[in-house]
Length: 213
Image 1 (cartoon, rainbow, N blue to C red):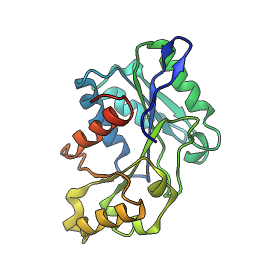
Image 2 (cartoon, rainbow, N blue to C red; image 1 turned 180 degrees about the vertical axis):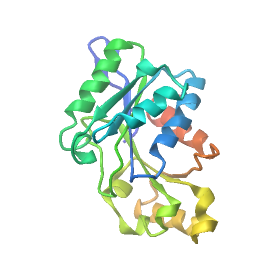
Image 3 (cartoon, rainbow, N blue to C red; image 1 turned 30 degrees about the vertical axis):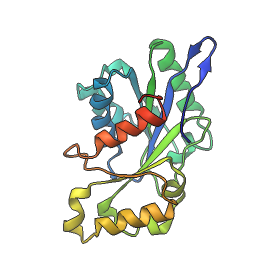
Image 4 (cartoon, rainbow, N blue to C red; image 1 turned 180 degrees about the horizontal axis):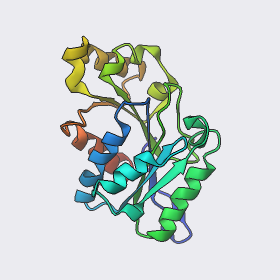
């Protein structure tokens, strides 16, 4: 889904971008790279993180110094991670609405899911656009498994590209297979540890979500 614009009353509501993926794929690291990149382009930003019974990821981002801690909210799922982003996203919708009330100028809210499996997807009632993060260390067969998260997301991110030679992964083939199972819908490669590929992710958000050239 591309081209997002919503209204609430007389104002434009913030676009909501989901970030999902398995445990350890690099979702929080991606958020930490996106925050300064998006703020550096003048985008008014807020963040929501999801964990099962803690606020661990939210506290990590608050302590990072990358963003005003008040702009980071935590949702405790208390159940399977996908429950609060797909089956009943009420808690996340309420958290996003509250951020918009507290920061009326916010343009973009990043919603990081708790770590889940390849079947994890976001409800369109919650997000306007969502990306799914997998990592090279998980194996180059992940795209071939055709999980709903891989297939249905608006953007597939293959992270930890620097690990490919260390785990016996043919990165070019993994990328090619990901494009094939997604019928050539967007797939981007990142190394969040070094910040590689982040500009391409930001560019897609600007172009396809915020309508910026």
